[in-house]
Length: 130
Ligand SMILES: Cc1cc2nc3c(=O)[nH]c(=O)nc-3n(C[C@H](O)[C@H](O)[C@H](O)COP(=O)(O)OP(=O)(O)OC[C@H]3O[C@@H](n4cnc5c(N)ncnc54)[C@H](O)[C@@H]3O)c2cc1C
Image 1 (cartoon, rainbow, N blue to C red):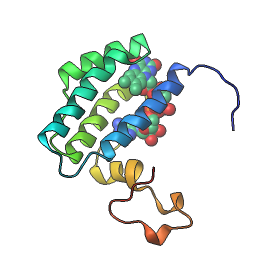
Image 2: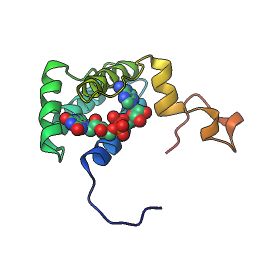
Image 3: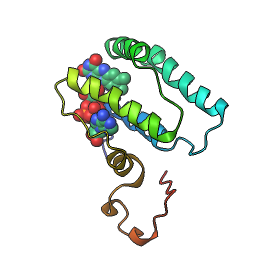
Image 4: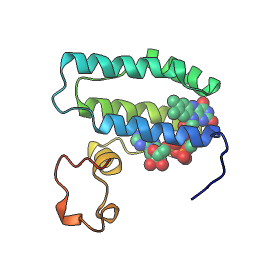
């Protein structure tokens, strides 16, 4: 384990932030109430205003205006976030990610069997791993 106590770099903070945001989307309730839909929308719209990297935050604010959060369902939120992340990937000349729901589920909620060596036969549909 890295025991250096350094502040996050832009890349490290960005990576951890995407992990958090995609995990939030992947665990969005399957039957959200209107209040839940609005809370998640408010969260994603507010987030760019508190993101602690000025250049990233500014782009993210603009993206929230041009491509507003889609919180009707878990699937719509996951697909929206994938699209938004790919816009940033493209800008940074990074490879785009497949925005098929099965690929997003595999990456952010279910994981391949090697993620669960001791319980591979024991993963249910609503597996919550953290
Ligand atoms: C809101 C925001 C704005 C940013 N703006 C900038 C910027 O303007 N300039 C800059 O230099 N950096 C910016 N960053 C950081 C940048 O996006 C990366 O996080 C950083 O470069 C590290 O990249 P990475 O290769 O670790 O993968 P990341 O892009 O951090 O992705 C993390 C993981 O997410 C998965 N993934 C990738 N794309 C998708 C997708 N579309 N859908 C689902 N999963 C996906 C992959 O498994 C990947 O390993 C921003 C980050 C955030 C959160």
